[in-house]
Image (cartoon, rainbow, N blue to C red; front, side, top):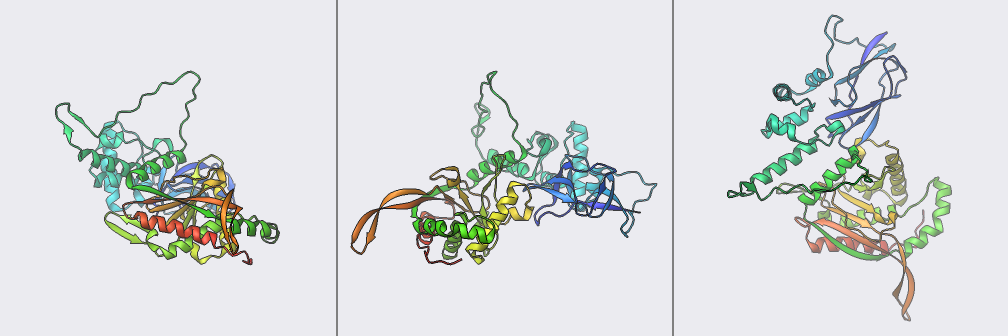
Length: 434
């Protein structure tokens, strides 16, 4: 029998740490290779981590709620697999999860952790801070008292990278405001709204995902100058074609054909016509994205929203888009997405029509500069041009709501883009074959 270290896996190209949510196995349990052993939360998604070896879960090194760097040991598995023994000798003292974090952190981060950890001891701040958070604190010269005052949105109130960046931005803004010397108060500071609570009211704590959503939505409204343009599109051809083939499609492919693939296809085509919608802003620089990766908002059973990404959407046909969207939507609802499937989006689509809404004003997903909401399809009387003159006919109509960042997307571009999406939807060919 050999002892094997189970390490915190890399769960995405931008993920450097994760929070241990739940251990699904106990010490002494028999585990199979690739069997789920624990749940880990990152700033993008919660995911289950499988065992790297079969054997017995001999020791759990990191408690639930602890933040662990990628590559750090999290457990020891006693395995019959031929492998190298642990490098630690039996006489060495056991290493705490916090010390393990220091061991895998870069040298400069280690010095930061040591310095601020000492401050924590002297200031009475017993919260645990990840290497990334401590590195930001050093770089931004955030002292022990300021660090302790930052509200955390992570599990058990832990401070996340987003909490730090928001604090830094707000601190910079506060410094830029002229202080009223006669009152000794800053004009920037907004008083907290007082509210009364009755005995019948119920107080509920936001879950971790809702805290993240709330913070990111507020950040986006503050970062981007939101403007929304609206267009009404006639999607009668799409409705008629889908009604004609949806039963045969489900029988052939084993899954339903929704309207979302049609919208994603039209958006991808319009982005190729107007590539300056497919950009990000980095300070005073504009980054033109070559890949067209479209995020699709999915409602979870909890009521929260998650946005998995369809990568290279312009390279998929209608069937390919349908299968991809059904797959990521289904796995999103059962928490089976990987962090990489939630990152890298360059444009976002939100189908508010699935909730019976006719239109909306969506908030941009940073660092993107635009998002499109599609409303419910409604039957409406409309004037239709025919060879023998205009007639009133019943048509299937839908509102498209295009929110964009007015810092870099002017009204002409934002308006032309959403109009082009509508044009592609309206031009759908009734003779299209699967």
